[in-house]
Amino acid sequence: LAAAWRFAQRTGRNLVIDWRGSCYLDQPFINAFPVFFEPVQDIAGVRVICDDQINQRSFPGPFFPSWWNKPSIDCVYRPDEQIFRERDELDQLFQSQQDSDANTVVCDACLMWRCDQEAEREIFRSIKPRPESQARIDAIYREH
Image 1 (cartoon, rainbow, N blue to C red):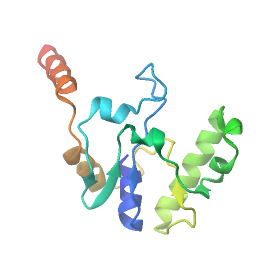
Image 2: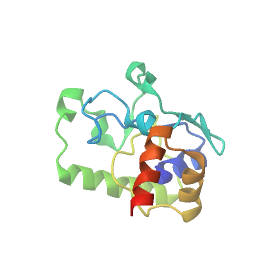
Image 3: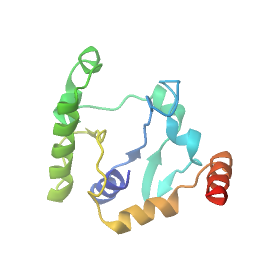
């Protein structure tokens, strides 16, 4: 999330947090972000879209990485090799300090440690767990 936010900040793009299909929920069309975190509309000047309106939105192509330009039926199965390839393409784009000609940049690969610590700190300052999630975190913390 921090790497995608930093890219959006640097390029003047909106950040869409779309965590549908999360392994933490059994409903594939529910965005996990608003289930676990308080709504946020802005992170340090970057407009954020992170609610379930995502199901009614259509994002303009072309897309980067190019794999996302395939017809949806071809995107049902994404092999690990493809995910790793996308991670490397995104890493190269983010490290280049350039933008992409694509209208939509899809960051759907783990990019941990691919951004600066200040970006990570900004994310942690800006997002807050929902009260029920925070209560569970606090209980685990007290227990251990």
